Length: 259
Length: 371
Image (cartoon, rainbow over all chains, first blue to last red):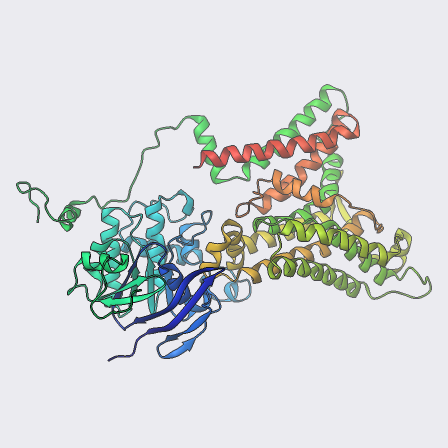
């Protein structure tokens, strides 16, 4: 068995009296697309936030490529190569598309302008942003300098996905990346996911859209009541099986405890 | 696969149509090109045009009123020079306030930081208690004053980020604390102009200047425009400036985007404190002496200037140029009402109040138009 890229064991997280993660395990292997499904409130988002540094678990360990990591903030996870698209998208509405794509990792101008005066290289960032959006087929964005608040919900999501795909070097996490997208854009995102995987980067895909999950994922992590219930192979299980597992209608064969 | 004859059957089949999708970048005819909409669009893209237009129109209006009421020529250089000299200190503080308000915060203690820094500069530089003994060299005294200003800003920043209190509460508290400290430090005594002139004339640098005909240019004005350029550059051309905007816009999104929110906020309040310290030097030059009870309401005046300049109190949007223009507008109304219209002082305050309300109303209207 190959070594997992991300391996988490016994993650616990409480918000006051609410248990969001209750001894959750997680494995992500190199080059795979892992689906994460679960009911609303099962703790998927908390799990993802723990992996992306936005939430510090109360207990449990996370290993990245075999080394234990303790992210104190999203910037540390990002510099370790984990890029995330959050459900809320995490964009600044008043800033431009390029500003948002480069937020927290701006390119500086070469030479003294950049090193002493800390001047950002806007022309180069704009060109890069335009290129990445075109790759994603977001042709309906007319002006790369327009503020994100002037974009539609789907376009915003497209920008967030383009940002993660462009910068993720080890792992890309997508939390509901197609929830607000049209048919064409959803298809593009799925193609983009395949492209990212071809570059050898594993992807975690959280989605309620079963056809999408079953189409692109190699393994599906079923989350229930704050922990991993089971991991299923989408080629051997049907979508209705998956729904039955995550809602508690049926227990998978190798799981005996009532979750 | 679907074809014209066989209707769509399977779940993924409908996506086959995507092959025929339109691939061009969207373009729209502007169908509402009426003059009003065109003006509105230009103003939306360049929000500082509003205070600029208000400034020019009201300047011309005061000139006409002065002419009509036979109150002399409002357009003469001395009047404009006086307006610019009188707004210099508020303009500086408005720059500090802009930084803070862009992060959706507010800084009520700016005036106390300003006076505390000025008192330290003057007392260290002049040593007024002992007339025979010289004070510190002026550059050292000035550096100490600016440093103290930055420290007080740092304290505000640390309280806001580490104890997680709202900026309004923190700066309301430090407003009182710094006020008490400044009175204790100075024993409520002013530093006299003659002492400063005799022992530390460099402190008066920003009050000096040169003349263009009847128009006096002070180094304070030049300093204001230079500092405005520096702040503009930092906010619009550096990553730090983008982070300041992002935090004001949506602090959670900024955090998730990997911005160290606390660190940026502390740097903003420290920078604002340092600007207040620098302003202390300018204010000593402008006034000539240091009184511990001067500039009592400059915190509100700076907020007024920033808001009139089109910066949103909700953070994330605003402009440095607007803040300077806002400070000039307030002073123009004050001077205009007394020189051109010759009404009583309280109507000047009345006008400043109306300006704020109109400015914010206009700003809200433009915002709605952009949604």
